[in-house]
Length: 151
Image 1 (tube, rainbow, N blue to C red):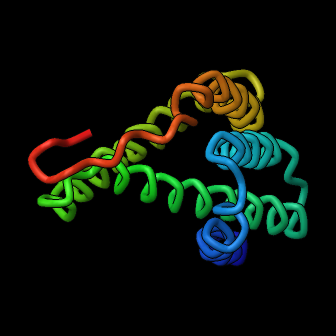
Image 2 (cartoon, helix red, strand yellow; image 1 turned 180 degrees about the horizontal axis):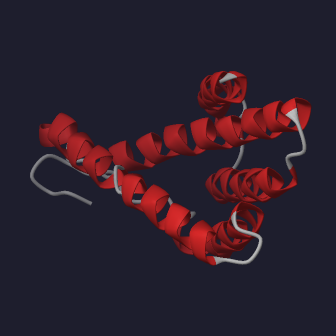
């Protein structure tokens, strides 16, 4: 239970770091940093050998998730129509709940791979790292939305 608590503490740290540190970085750098942190901390789960390493990787994984969650919220609100900001945000948040499907797919993947969970973590880390290909497109700041004229 301790690594789970540490992971959630990490999420809070990551969410706090984005406005304190991340907003001083260029948008593509914020995106790339979030992806790299998530890829490294996901791969790190394959190397857990005990409580200390589980806690360290859980903390880093939490920081990566907190950073990325906060960044997702910033980007979602940048695209929202000011006349419907709350509704638009709710739609983006509902779409982010697709991660529940990802959890189920991860378990299925781990159950069918040699090496099971370590192999699944390394494979998923590679998949996350491939998202760096989208940084140039996502790194451009969109035109601000105006009421009745969404971006």
